[in-house]
Image: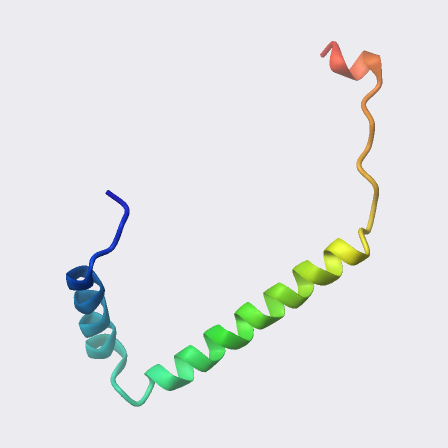
Length: 64
């Protein structure tokens, strides 16, 4: 379980078209693409410039 076959994908697409209509889908996809692009840029910037170094735990904290 967990893999989507062609039939499941087609059913999902039909439901999306029925819910949002054909005119709204390109606008939704554009917004989704923009969001993914911004997320990737933020993740890339986060790797290049970490805001803080990970803290090392002292021996006292490890015993808790």
